[in-house]
Amino acid sequence: LIGALIGDAAGGPVEFQPAQRGPWTATDAVLSAEGRAALAAAFRLRPYTTDAAPYAQWEDQAPPGTVTDDSRFKVLFFEALARAEGTLPDRATFAQVVLDAHADTTGPHAALRRAWLDEFAYAARWVLGERDEGARPPARAWGGIPTMAGQMPFLPIAALHPGDPEAAYRAVWALDFLDNGIARDLNAALVAGLAAALDDGATWARIEAAMRATDPFGFGEVPWVPRRLDGWLDVAHAAVAEAEGRPARLYAALERDLQAETWWDAWVPMVVVFACVELAQHDPLAAMQLVLEFGYDTDSYLQVVGAFVGALHGPEVFPAPMRATVEAHLERAHGVTLAEWLTLLRR
Image (cartoon, rainbow, N blue to C red; front, side, top):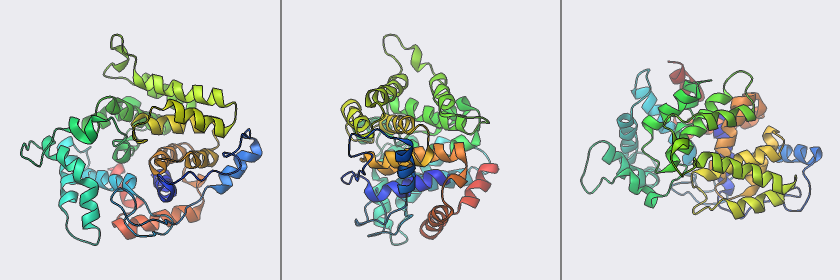
């Protein structure tokens, strides 16, 4: 949880800004042990230099530690978990939470909140059985593009099923009306991998193996159509092999091969994260900085890698002042705490 929040807050200030690449990523340098240490030391929280926006931060020139929609969706998930009173919420409960937030006219961010949730509210109304002009089938969301939307609220489901990737996958699938097409499989598999990361003795290799093996609905058995999850993980490894230890070459290979239409396509965070982690030789903070310096949808990529880093290494992998800053913002801006979230997960 803290890793996902820190990743979001670290990536938010540079999201879709020109990539800020340093000496180890802007040149053709091979990333050495010295380079990994330098990247890890460079990882930090930055202030925002942009005005508030619906999908970004909700304060003009916000201070370091401010989160974006990636974390706000987790706030909604935990609200649904609270309403479910000790069980996993069903799809209707989560849809109602989305609609209630969309309709909330209180507070200084009401207009931003509504604009953020407009597209999702159409699908939520459809899930709840409405068929008027305010409801649209989930399959039309974002023009039918398979996005990483489900990665925002549903990563915490892994904590409900530690060491049980299939249960985590099925739980995400049951809730997820935010995603289209292959995104439902990719995003559920990512949470399955995070559940594997919470198992004793977890490694990145075991995480990937769990993602590939967890396929309860047989996406890998479809005639003539390989499972996209396997193909995209293969792209990540191929990009690392081509880079030969050079981050700049890795970035070039990713930009060429990701086939990104929006840079928040469902497979993009997964490929970027697994490629950067491998090239960083699994150094947690160096990998996070590599993801940051790649650019594009940085808050979304970093909340994914942050969640995995936190699951594998514990919260202490992040400096205490960084953790405190993000937790303070979560309580100040959203009125919730990590302690409350943990209580809900333990019910």
